[in-house]
Each structure stands twice: as C-alpha cells, then as structure tokens.
Image (tube, rainbow, N blue to C red; front, side, top):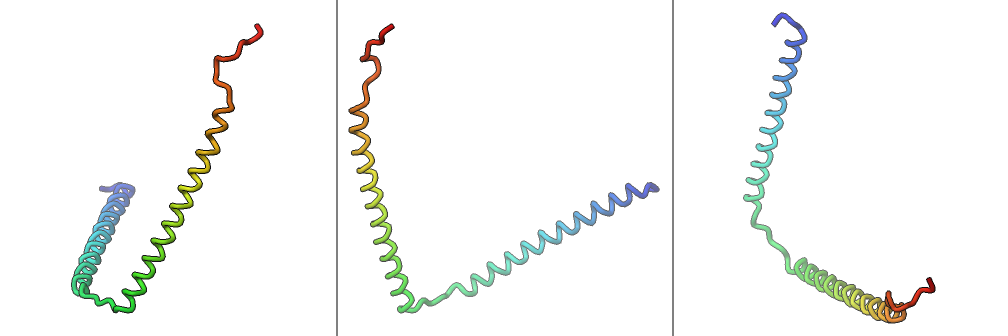
Amino acid sequence: MSDPGIVMMAVSFFGACAYSIKTIANTFTRRWDQKRNVADNSVVTVSDDRMTRLEASVEAIAIEVERISEGQRFTTRLLTEQAQPIQAILPKPGKFDTPH
C-alpha cells in the first residue's frame, strides 16, 4: 500500500460505507421511534362538533360529485345524439361509380 492513490480510494470507500450505514441506522431508529409514539397516542377523541362538520362536508362533496356525474351523462348524451345524424348523412363507401 505504498501508492497514495490506492490509499485515498480505500479511505474514501470505507468512509462512504460508514456514512451510508450510519444514515440507514438513523432512518430505522427514527421510524421505530415514530411507530412507538403513534402506538402511545393511538387513543384520539373526536368531538361531536367536529364529527358533525365532517359529516356535513362529506354530504356536500357527495352532492357535488352527483352533479358532476349528471353533467357528464348529459354531455355524453348530447355528443352521441349529435354524432348519429352526421354518420347518416355521410355516404357509404363503394356506392358511387367513378367516371374512369
């Protein structure tokens, strides 16, 4: 190991490995702590007032989604009705004699 280039590469490699292992260990430690904290705080109470507001919001969203779907059905019906007469007007291929 008298070549300084090889020594620098080895030190860099082992330094990068140590940093990567440290980062991965910190990530697992944080996740483990978060899971433990979530398990400790699993009992959460929701007030009746908040639940009422949530139910009203869900109802309003359901009504708006129904309106959007009704508009989509109406638009689709208009487009299909409009497309049918155009197809009836167009000549079918093969019914015309060409003057050659």
